Length: 165
Image 1 (cartoon, rainbow, N blue to C red):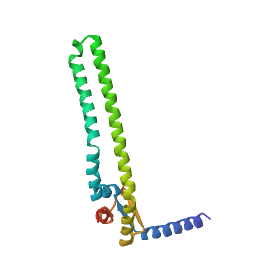
Image 2: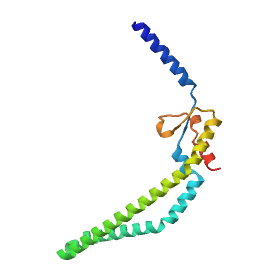
Image 3: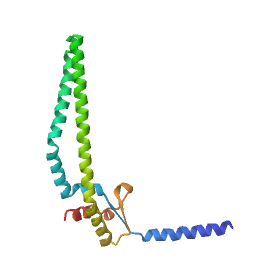
Image 4: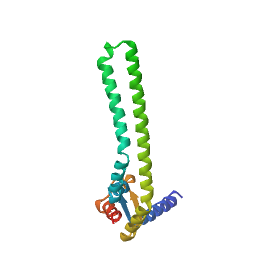
């Protein structure tokens, strides 16, 4: 009985191995291809222009907080308690302002990136489908899911070419 079940197991294993051996797989780094594309460069330039004012406000708040901190460290010992308390409160307020502005900017940038990814999705899907058809592949995996890939199976550069058309 044991030999029969072992024989069935080995037969099933060999059958699954032969099916697996016939599966043709490619790998792409979607993030690299997408963010290296011409559309991504244009998007990045637009984002820099769009958020330049917000970035300047964040830098100003950061610089003001840093200046207050340096002044507190340098002159704090010579100040009376009320001056030191006033400057400490001012410093804490600048830190709060900086954190608020930075969080708001980061959130806005993340939202815009998400919008870009969603708008690019149909184009990426079409390019991946073309790669499947051109290379007669059964499967394309993201590079993050793969430990190692032979260079000839990495189709990231071809995907980038298709996205830049």
